[in-house]
Length: 200
Ligand SMILES: [Zn+2]
Image (cartoon, helix red, strand yellow):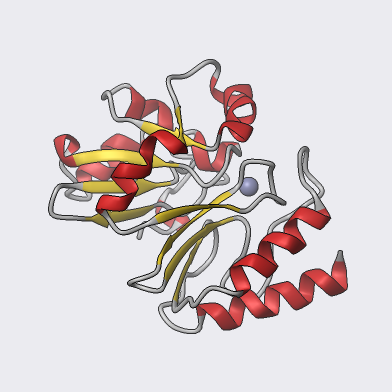
């Protein structure tokens, strides 16, 4: 996990998660770092072993670093509902729909779960075996949820997504911002759901 604070001087940035399998690395979110690729290489991640990058949504603090990865011919995936959001920051890019990356996700034991609310194409990535959830800006480890007042946000979708996530068994919760937790993920999600039902 690369915490957002590692990216000094780049402004608002997301966390980045790197999952390793026998075949190589999968990257989750691309941060606000304009040269994420060099950062990853300096952290010991060989460029040729990166299988793909999966985005949780299209906001600029999660996608800016994508340009450096695409420049190295690394495949990128986003829910198509967030494609125009991504392209509003990066211009037209070769980014595939997550449905085309399913087999890659399966190799590392993850499923893509559509969780709209923060943005229309917000997506979480879940490992049932590991009880692990990469949650983007949908739910955070402190029991709060992402903003719904930005363009494309929806209060009712957020509440429905949190309800859906609260039915999963989650130990490790790896959100797009702030700290991650390796235990008690479900508790944080339940708290976020009750906070959302109260606040939205
Ligand atoms: Zn966001």
